[in-house]
Image (cartoon, rainbow, N blue to C red; front, side):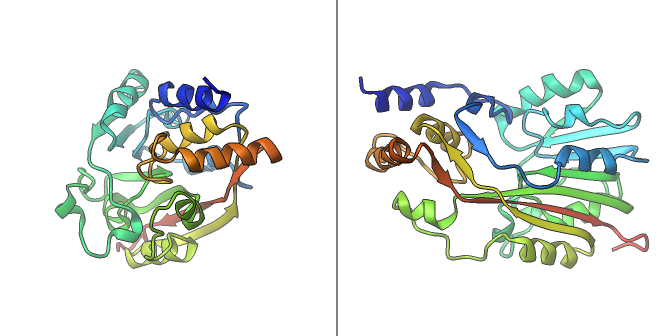
Length: 266
């Protein structure tokens, strides 16, 4: 078996759970944004008594940032992760609720939360703080469940884009881009005051073709339906690039948004 085949086979067989990309340590360099999401959470936690983490993954991030007291709830839309999140968070006193994830933010114009069963299953004005890391969300649902004066903190990520889709022969997305202007507009349309909005270029450099395959499997929204047999020729091109240049770089970006529900309501 060739080195190429060994690397791809290893990546296909590698387990993935929660939101843990530690398998890529030393095999991919992920450019960090100029802010720290963890530090932003700690700042936002001041005087928080009710906290919601939307699409918590395996609960790894939330477990590090719990308020000293109060109610903590996490939702998760990917069924295999629900048990992982529960095992992580329930011993810490947090409730984990399985619920359908919101559709991509750019695809929300023709539907609504109730039509997709992806509404947040909580009463109005429940939470002081809503968190969301790298997952889609309904701005209107976030605004609804926030208490007046409550804060929404989200870090969003874009990877690959149309260049990567074209490389693999996928049809590029011709719809609106989920960029900073789009995200800010959605939040404002939901009645939230956007108090911070930042974006940064954060490419990922893969050091072997297996690392790229693993990432694409774990994040299928970046490259839908990767098939290591059907897509072998393109993966071999990536392997050739790494052989010549040492890395295969995929463009990406991060966004940080902080919004608040006005004290006077929405």
